[in-house]
Image 1 (cartoon, one colour):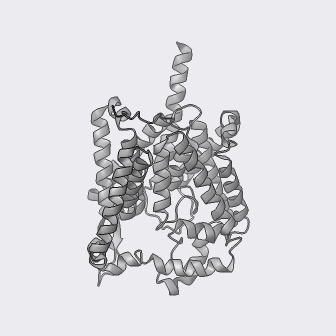
Image 2 (image 1 turned 180 degrees about the horizontal axis):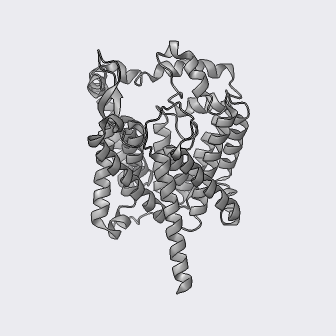
Length: 412
């Protein structure tokens, strides 16, 4: 019995430690400029968690090191080594190295956690933690609108006024929508198991995250969630799903041929103008400048986190001072050149192959989601560990679910 109680306490500690890292990594409780690198109490809390996780990872390396060196994970090591090399010629090397440390710490924490807990237990901890962030954010939306809503410029006003999009305690609406969508994906894939734990809590969590996603008005996250869930569903091949996928493809083609796309885009845009969609909310101006700069250093890039320093120098061309390329693939090229992007894509392909091999469609969904979300956002390897680092880490570092495909009834 004492040994059993010790094991239970150890598992609870690991789940709590993962939850604390997720909570403090994703939430912010003070006004802070995106460009700020100042150290405050929240930064100190994050550093304490990262150093603790890094220290535990080093002490208990035998628990997880063998897994990292497996054929399906070894490319992550290569990727991190390339990031470290790119830090050495970054415009702000010290800041770049601190970002690198945050990435390594998060991956070590998740690899170590997977040695004590299975995927379901770790994800349940994340599921509840992000729901807590949603609750706090929705309350703040109504009680502290100047903090929890995205500011908008109003004609004649000297400063931004609170708009309608929920940013909550995550810093911006896109982050809020991203994490809510991620939690919904977890809840959908583990619906039976989490509902069997406590049906009321499960339903409440799903509704709260759906509410947060809709209030954030993050169209990219919503679209990526729907497409990735649909794609993962049809990738679990059965005759009925292949037929359904073919039917949907035909309907989609017919839709684009018959519908006035410009009118549709005008309806979907927040401003009522089709240009907002066709320019990816102004991102195409950033991409044009980024591509030109990438062509100057195609093999090495400009260094990890370099977009924070270099892109603002071209604000007169873009119209504002962006901190990233707002595209995952351009961000990799900008930071680490063609070798960096090549390793990144190879890493995704390798993990996707093994996720399909073991029928782990949760990982398949997350990988597709991140690749789609990356079309309009600089995710995962852009700077400090963030929301997409957690998503990628949970898909990459945890053990495979190893679900057996459902048996199909044979015709009589």
